[in-house]
Length: 325
Image (cartoon, rainbow, N blue to C red; front, side, top):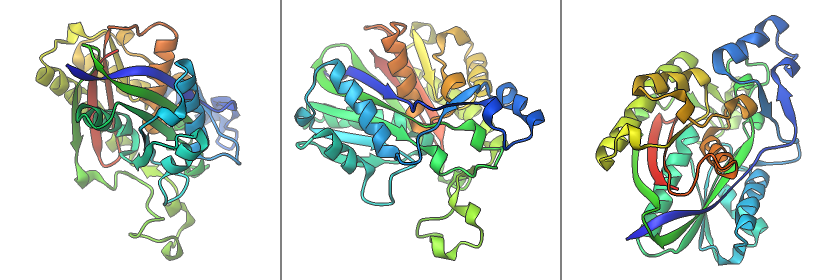
């Protein structure tokens, strides 16, 4: 049986940690609401001189170093990001160059916060096709550069970070067992950066804030809680696996109340969910990969265990993966 096996993981978050109390450009009376409504206590913010690919290179480097895997042996690099270095070329191309992965193709995918689940499914398909023996999957985000600093509905929620997984082909029961991906393009305006593309070029903006990320918070919460639960149940039904067979759930780290709602609707203890959003905030598509790497590094998630990863985000999009680590 040819499977897509996790060979190594890595992650990187910037050194600068900004607590809720340090967001002094907001009224002090409102700061306690951040933790109450989201569970976020802190977020990491990258230096002004760095960009998304810098975080990706660091996470990828840690992933490869753990198993002493030379970058020039990589056959492919797939990078998930919704905060790219530039509109073009693909941010993955700079990552490939910085790593010295001279024999790897490099491409970006963008499914906003769902990018982790979409990317895992894509890499799984490429490896199971028989064309590739290894692919490095990275998710890297730097939302601090695309947020409006005085928007209390978005700025306190997000942080910067990157995660990476080195996938290899293996004849084993370990690996990616099943994936489910969904999209509802009717909600494409719910989470977006309005300007900067061909729909609204920068020179046609009538308000500079159109170049910043925006979302309709209440609608997003309802969507995430509903679809985040449904996609896990669909995944397990299609895979023929029961909820009690899953050792760990790693949901997109967007909001503690969303995770608690999903946990409650599934009838699964929150103790079986890996959670780190209190430390990092919402790192968009990187959140699942950062949480997975930390859980494996801490020996919480161990070889042979069954893990469900799930995410939801702009598009609207949502997905889930069943993986035996």
